[in-house]
Structures are given as structure tokens and as C-alpha cells.
Image 1 (cartoon, one colour):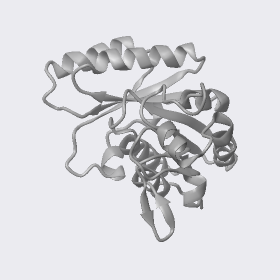
Image 2 (image 1 turned 90 degrees about the vertical axis):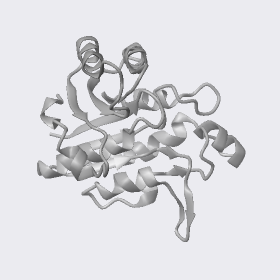
Image 3 (image 1 turned 45 degrees about the horizontal axis):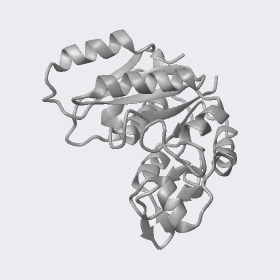
Length: 226
């Protein structure tokens, strides 16, 4: 059975790609075919092959299906700024419609396990009044939420879950990514998240010295996803 999810985070730099790569690796270990998309990425490096984003490359490395970089990351910007600002500076119309077809192309590959990764948090602006969350709605994908565990994460997580529900999408699961292991009352915070988020916790990933996809996969439970 094919399964596809939109993966978002409670904020930027909470480890979305680290967790996404781990989930894809876990799926591969379970014998599933994998595919992924990163519809828009800023903070890309100019290479002889064009602009390349490290997050998109990490996802591509965990795709078992033969995908090109351009398929995984169709819109790339060099400045490490909000995508809508980068698009404005580049003179690119960044809308849901401009991102929808490339991501539908990824989903049409019919991999056993597919992830479409957002940028930043849930309500990231595109052009006009479009948001990246509107793309998740258009794709009708259940959502996996990466919670960057640090001071303030409970409110960020609950507000994000509320916004996802308000947008009519199911929260399929969440992952606790321990960004600050010295967070005061860490266990109590995790227990509160587990009590209040309306979805299973797919794993608790500690702060790893070398957070490879293989290492992260060991802390995740794909079988908790519907």
C-alpha cells in the first residue's frame, strides 16, 4: 500500500530534513520503495550543475526510486532567506499552482513511502496570499510534525497542530527531535506533548553527534503510522 505524507516543523532549524531522511531510511530498511520532494528551498549553493540545497540532496540520497535533483527540488534560491522573499528578488512567481504539478509528479511515482517536505514551519508565505500549507492542502496529504524540543516547544507544537486541523488535514504522527538536551523538565515536557498532541509519537531522537539518516532511523517507528 502506498503511503505519502507532508512533513513540517514547529519552526525553522528544528531538524525536519534530519527526521525526514531518517524516516525514508527506516522505510528502505523495511523493504519499501521511497521517494521525496522538497518543493522550494532557499540557501542553496551554486555548483557546476546549478543550485543545490543540502536538505534536498539529503532527501534525494534516501530515495530508492530513480529521481533527478530537479524532480525532488524544482524551485531553488541561493539566498538563505524566506522563500517568498527570495522568489521576489529573483522575479519568480512562487504560488501553490507553480509547486503543485512537480509534487504531483513525485506522488505519481507511487513509491511505497513518499515524503513531501515543507520549508520552515507550517504557515510559510508564498506569493500573494498563498502559503506553503496550502500546498499540503492541495495535495491532501496527512502531516508528520517534527517538534524541535527546546524551551517553548509545547506552545509551538500545539499551535501548529491546531493550524493543521483547522486546515482540514489529519496529523498522522509527530517526532520529538531533542535540539536542547538540557531543556528544563525535559521528561515532563515530552509527557505533556504526548498527552496533548492528537497523534502518536513516532520517535524521540536525541541530540546526535553524527545525525546520519541511518542513525536517526534507529529511533523511529514507522509502524505507528496509519
